[in-house]
Image (cartoon, rainbow, N blue to C red; front, side, top):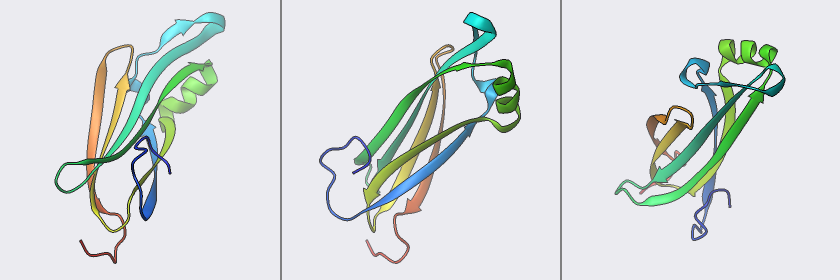
Length: 121
C-alpha cells in the first residue's frame, strides 16, 4: 500500500498527483557555491465523506539548486509527485498542502472525487 495508514485494507485505487509549486511562493536562501537552498513539506490526506482520515502521505523536499535550475523553476514551478492509495468505490475529499519551512507559510487545496466512477456508496 502507498501511504502512511498501515491499517488501510481492502480494494484500493492509487492516486498520483503532480504538483508545480510557484517559485515565488517559496523563500530561498543563499548557500555554498552560488546555490540557493529551500525546504518545503508536501502532504496529502484523503478523508471519507464523514470526515474520517482514510490515508495520508507526504515528504519533505530539501532543495539546493544552481542558477540555471532556479531560472527554469521560475518559469515552470517546482515539480513534485506524490501517490496515495484510497479505498475503491468511496467518495473522497483529498486535501493537499505545501509548507515553506523558511517562512512558515502554507497553502492548501481540497478536491472532492469518486475513487472509481462506477461504484456505489
